[in-house]
Image 1 (cartoon, protein in one colour):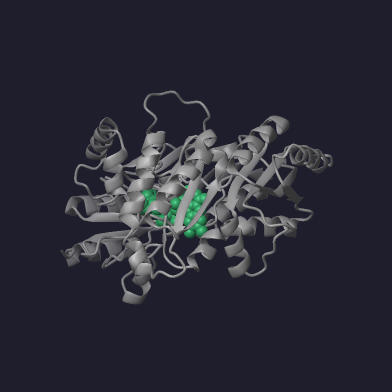
Image 2: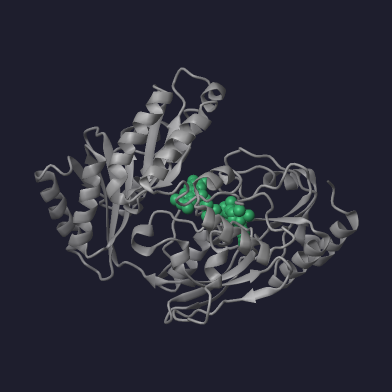
Length: 471
Ligand SMILES: Cc1cc2nc3c(=O)[nH]c(=O)nc-3n(C[C@H](O)[C@H](O)[C@H](O)COP(=O)(O)OP(=O)(O)OC[C@H]3O[C@@H](n4cnc5c(N)ncnc54)[C@H](O)[C@@H]3O)c2cc1C
């Protein structure tokens, strides 16, 4: 189904010569998702530079019933920002809307546009001596709008929460072009329904987010980063509880890393080294930050880890001695996806259960996977402090990608059915996009789905916002 050429011409006129791409080579990066699972087509990528332009685009597309696919950094893991194959949808990139409109250090808030790269938002906060704590492996390319629309998680959720917890208000262009101006940087505003939360995690299916009022925090004046060796994830859970109590909830990162993941990183990622002498079945990367300059923090954490060692809770630990060592510790965690890609196709799950049940879940899920793929290589790592695991299975050494991926439906069913028995979530932080639409129907409560469909119908009766995603 092709789009009327006069509409395309009108859309080009709205954004001006700098505001669109329509040559095959320029459009190409917008046609494929990050994991290369989907390939779409589009005649036009629009790159507006103001809310007014977004509003005009939406009004025109709504009148013509043409689908609009918003895209940020295109780092989504579930095909959320890829247009359909038939070329009937317009892609709307927010990349030119990347202004930090204001920073108010006394109110601990910042207003930034949706196209700001996450690292730029972090830097703008830091230059006002504040912290914007959202942090992901993709922070150099993902955008604030994408983070908001996926309700991103990342490595500091334990202390600061997910994206939803970091936002006070949003500016959104509705599918009919009206602008919902909710950019008040207020911490208290009980004037009816919380419209802001509707658009966060909606993956572009309800409107286009153009700007956000973000919460800022004090920057930790001192912090300790450690890599700890353990024998069993259940010890990781009890260590987390111990350190939360010991520090008064100052643990910001607590990431579980299995031995295989660390070995893959050491083999495939340059400039990495294991700071621990021995090899262990499991590792934890943890970070603790304190508000005041505290020279004794490192000593106190060291002593507490020594107590944990004596009691058999951990088997080894190394504390980063410098900023460059800290960065190396982080690289061991953040490059796991890259290292895992090097050993062939993998079947991925982004699941959550309660933190306390997570060790038992790993045991049961691993048994189920082994009953389907006895030599599949399980790499289950992630945000243990949030009960969130990336429970991934890479193909066996002696199997080809294609025949391994044929097992995906069986493995997914086994893992997701187990998640349902635990009362967990089949998508903890990556969203639904196109990849998990059927899974959503299978696992989400029917009443919740009805409410979601009613909201979609109310806001987007013509179904033009990111058609074919989520619902
Ligand atoms: C190396 C790596 C590490 C990652 N680590 C994490 C992690 O720890 N935690 C985590 O949660 N995710 C993680 N991700 C996934 C991904 O980075 C996040 O989902 C991120 O929030 C997506 O942002 P983006 O700008 O790339 O969005 P895109 O991929 O461009 O879009 C994502 C969705 O949001 C919609 N959208 C984008 N912008 C807007 C807008 N302005 N208005 C309305 N809808 C919009 C799109 O239509 C799409 O549905 C990781 C990805 C990579 C590659």
